[in-house]
Length: 182
Ligand SMILES: [Zn+2]
Image (cartoon, rainbow, N blue to C red; front, side, top):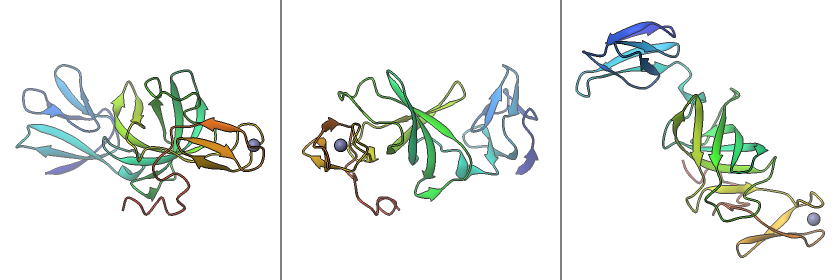
């Protein structure tokens, strides 16, 4: 069973079904939060809304590649360019906590990073870079802006010799990084 719904549309009452993906409840009524198709899962007793643009909103467990937009004290903001190796056009940002990563410069603005989505919270998409394959895919020297080469777990500038640290992905500098996880 599936129906076209708009954000705010009533799709169930919580006595019948719980809010699933792209749905929320106010303690009584389950409503859609996006434009899409409502789908009732009778086995799990939940009602989901399948977003019409599912490829632009990553879900938990998705691997995303994006460009670092801002570096804050304990997190980075990343504009998502690819979800599970598929390019996305929509401007979707996610944030990644970096507090637990023991690096001075986890990533710099404009770096290309690979992250795993851990979920949606308070309207923001949260990601992690804890796994070995996650982290910086491409970066530049912080001093002169030239290319860097990995040197064990740090990076060294090919031009000025400046050494720095990053949370490097195991795919760092692999030009075919998009094919790594098909
Ligand atoms: Zn340099």
